[in-house]
Length: 332
Image (cartoon, rainbow, N blue to C red):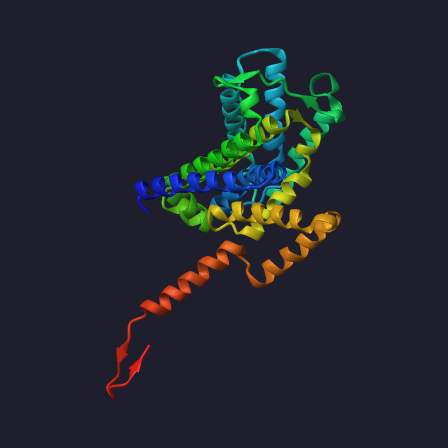
């Protein structure tokens, strides 16, 4: 797909989000949609790592929740304006995660997942015990300014504004990742994912591209964490817990990780199912677990993977040339 078409689709998607915002009958439902979009952005980061590196992370909650804590510390100490602090937090996460990635992407398979789990839990324990800095198990409030980028809080905290800001951020991040994967970087990382030994044989240095993928996925998770923190105005240690990463990973698997929109679909389906269940919300994880088993058995590549496979199969059946046999009969 040409970049101009991708830009056009992104504009149409933003307009579609505006229509959803206008058509949503209640602020409570709009708040649920916003929460779903926040986790869709988080799932996009986790899914990007799985798609391009073939690695499963149980520790990306570190970047999701950690971004809110770093933002809270910067604003509490008054080191810089909030606008610059947002950029500083994103850059800080990118640099730190790249350095971490240079070490841990060398570890294959399940060992990588366990290593990310250990790192994430280490910072979770640090956040719960460093009461002087993080508020301990009670968490910490984030003193966002009364005006951000020239827009007053009275406007920014409206459910409609929060929804559109989150929706536009999700579309822009997805578009950026899509365009990035169309470059040589996307081809190189896919080659490394499919056969790292062969990639090394033809002269590709594999560690740096894999670490870059890890860093990009961490930055996307951090953006989701900053938006979530602004939405709530609070940084809680629970946002660093491994269970947050696990639930997000379930969203990725259900939605499918072969496409960028798969994790987004999985997150939206998860929140819609949780909202529809209503009184049975206590058992939502059990029900979602059954759905996960069904997806793994009947659609190993998730909802979007099954849809893409079905569309390709239908397209092949339509375009398969008709051959004439020597008897004059037509065979497909």
